Image (cartoon, rainbow, N blue to C red; front, side, top):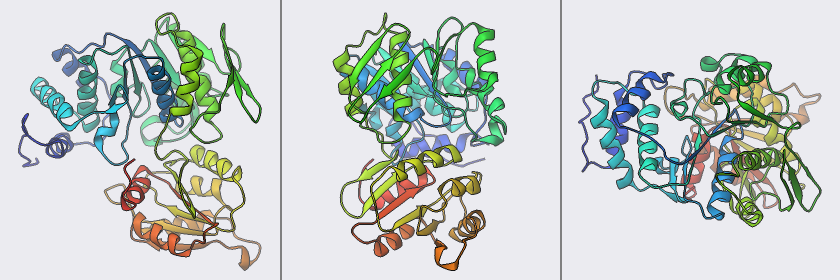
Length: 436
């Protein structure tokens, strides 16, 4: 058992986070019973419109667009996302402002007082604290991102007025199952009977469709109930009874962003009796939405791209986004990935796009050495037809060293792609002295 001192209302946020991290024997333990019990003791209720967003990839972008559009429409909005890039506070935003240390500490103290003998995981404890923060903030709407899966994720103690599933693909297979059907079943449990259930995956697993039907959710399918069309200048959304035309492309870059944006607009159409949103707010919100680390391009030369993608589906989108960019003589990978992820699957999707891989070691029990990662990359890359085509591979102690080596080698017209994990992107961002 940890000897960490129990913090109080006067303790700092880092002290509280260290305590919360040491509380529970397992980093991840799925299940709603513990969270529900403490939520009842806290008398936790959110008296506003609740939008829950799950999915393998695209959750963060969809949440960011919903928040930006609703803020532009003049609503008071809470946004909960995870994980954070640099500071824990990034996970909770009230009216577009990141939660202060003091606001979070106050909620942590309340959860600690209420939990009694109930052991909460880090995610359970912090989620309950953020929900309590929102409950006291007199909000019109909250946008809540599911942490892992759906059925047993703490966020699912909230009954969504509208739930969105952005995509279903393989990730977290140790927890959610090793097929799209199993994962789709887990994610579909954020849907609620009689309420709008948006699915942005163009080919949803049958388990998701079956569960939505079994509980009587109002299922909105991409391609059937809503869609988008676009040309080079602008795009349009078409739903069941609402069209939004002549929209500017979202500020968030990337191939999948219209899919995410149209899911957000489908949710807003489904909720329009409770949260009417004028066209100007949609336009403004799409242009203002920002999300660090999702195909984020830093200003300056060489071109530096940050992407937290860490599964094959996200890697395929990254590959497509890279292919859609202009010409760069050389492209360098700064690659760091946790050892419980599908490294081979990610590398295979990006094969042929990098002239050199700088493989970074990552900390923690799920991290590994740069040498180990370099060896996995070597095995996963297809053998070149001639020696001249082979991509170089270097092992580095950490992402900062990997980035420094790539930066030293890159010419002004080249590009560096930092990807594979939130940890990798955060380390490089911090080394550059940037806040997310």
